[in-house]
Image (cartoon, rainbow, N blue to C red; front, side):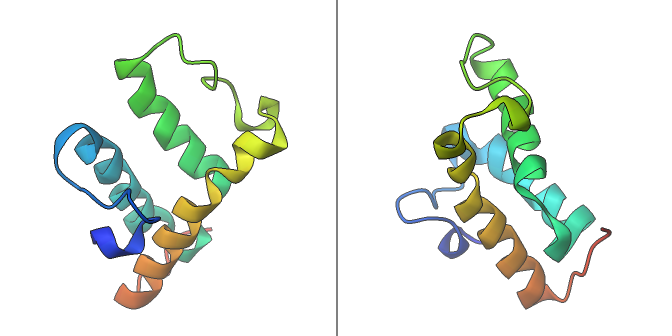
Length: 92
């Protein structure tokens, strides 16, 4: 995946976000265009657990309010776009 596929201002793939983007790349390879907002949240939660285990959003996706759930959608779209560009259908 490349930085141009991530929401504006969030494309730096070095530094503190490198591990998160690596997890998103794994999602792209495993799930491809079938990645969901739940998948993205779970990857973010695993990454965040190691960095900030007291974060308020470290709950199951379904327990998040709608505004917080919507924050995952740009990443879902970016992962799907990257998968589509690479011909990675992934598993449903």
